[in-house]
Amino acid sequence: MRISRIYNNNVALTRDSYGQEAVVIGRGLAFGKRKGDLVDPTKVEQTFIPEHDISAERLSWSLSEIPPEILAIASELETKVRNTPDIKIANSFIIPFADHLHYAVARAREGLQVDYPLAPEVTLLYPREVEFGRRALDLVHERLHLTLDPQEAIPLALHLVNAQFATADMSRAFRMTEVFAQVFDVIGATYGKPIDTNSMSAARFITHLRYLFVRADRENNKQQRHITQPGVLAALRADAPQAFACAQKVLLLLEMQLNQPLRQDELTYLTIHIDRLAQEMWGS
Image (cartoon, rainbow, N blue to C red; front, side):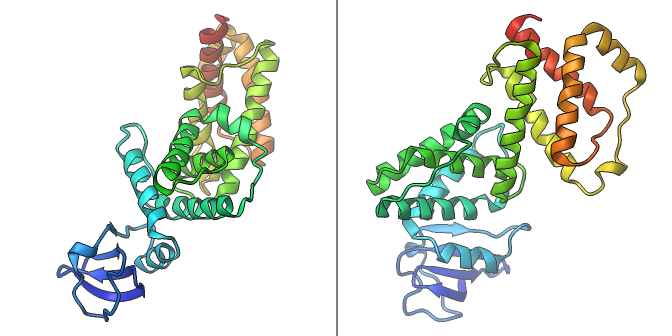
């Protein structure tokens, strides 16, 4: 690999004989080097290959701003996530995640704290992602001998939530969390019973709601309506009247929060998921 651009003593953009670009990181690997020089492979600690959703230039600049020890932690956590069979994340995950971890470490060293008001909702709705955030805090403590505020697990969890839907917009994750909590409030109020968000049915329902958000965000959503046959809805209404009535309330809430009409078949899917949720939890 030859250097095509140097960002600092530890980060350089390289190109191999096949034209493949990569960002290489290692202490002092670019010190005293110039464009066109060969990279000493023994000094390369990490290699990042840009993909279609992030340019080599942006990747290089972003990575050059983050300390190598933070990148090593973030990269290790990313690898663990990618090796989890039922989780797929965007290629751009590493940058916002490592960047947040970097500033979380800086805040901890300065004794600063940040409050995350949706922490209870995030913990209930995304238990697997929150556990990932906690593992990140443990790894920071192990590698850097620094204890981060336990609340930092919440935004780190939301970075994983976002990455599963190819977005780095944290405000979107907070918005989803608020709406999901409201949806479960509606269901709990309709049935008059608390909801166990750790159940398999709740997890499936949350997954459905996540993808509903993705569909609603697509510009052509209104042109891609899948109309449920009237007989299907009629059968659901007869077989699961309480779930159907609850689904109507949830659909109205979602349309108000998303500020747009939803596909007609969403009422069918909502009824099915709510009925499954109720059957598993309360047998009703």
